[in-house]
Length: 396
Image (cartoon, rainbow, N blue to C red; front, side):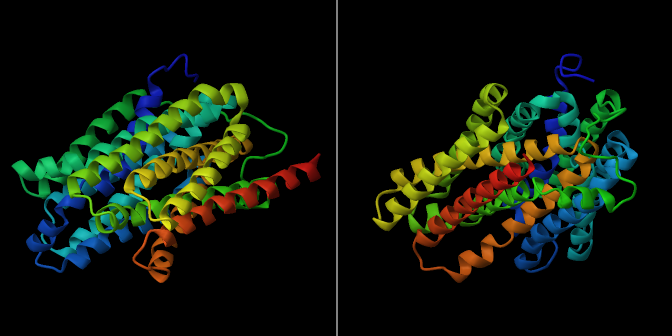
């Protein structure tokens, strides 16, 4: 399997991994309607998002090593089947208990389908994995960009059940395409530094025991922490602090997603020439500068335009750091790509989970806590890259 023999396969892989942001973002506008329909408090419906993310992370921990042992195609088919059936069940959910249960199974099965994708990208692009991951992220970013608008549009003509009907239809379509076109990886590329896992836990031992992998994993975690600081604080920052309308907020949020796509496009063009490590560190330099500028403009209480520009550059830099750190890890563990993806995905969500409590703890009613926490995340990446450089120096 090569990208030349399957030129459109990357689009299918992005469509598979997009089921998660679609399932997360499409129903957000319908939360008040769901609470009213199910005769429950809206807090219980909001809790479904946390339950979804927790179930998704748990699923990745389980299915990552299984993908390395059983193969990618069977898990993708199983995951899409479960995701689709759960979506159909959500159409007919008539109480909050059933709703939360089906959201759990939807996320858990979705993890089985999506955890296999980075391994396929790694095999498809081989030494150019970072380029493939950039293409994947660039296409996949359309999902969070469009999902809230799709959900709002459905509510104009129908009720909230139709949102999950659309997700079920999407699941059926992607299932059919995967059944027809998704190949299996027959044999991972052999390396001298890694052996095929002997049991479920050996893959995790291989990944975490590698002295060069640990600082790269930590880099990914700090970068994700900074990213989730933005996701958690963005509505307060733009709507409450700067006082923009919901419509302007949607435009500004879309602009940030667009910057993520542009950064992935630039990375896909340059990474084959300069390598993922150099692109990661270029993103780190941009991130340190833009995060420092963000702190300065908010300390001086300058206008929203300065914050928007600083945040846009910072989000692009986080994309460069995240995409290339993932690629470096995948290239280091070709036999354990599923386990590596599980580690990355679980720790990414786990580190992001600290953003909300910390933002609440340091809340001052200004944008400074948000700015300083994003700077601290990027600084953490800097420390980890120094650690990574020393680890490689010891190996040499």
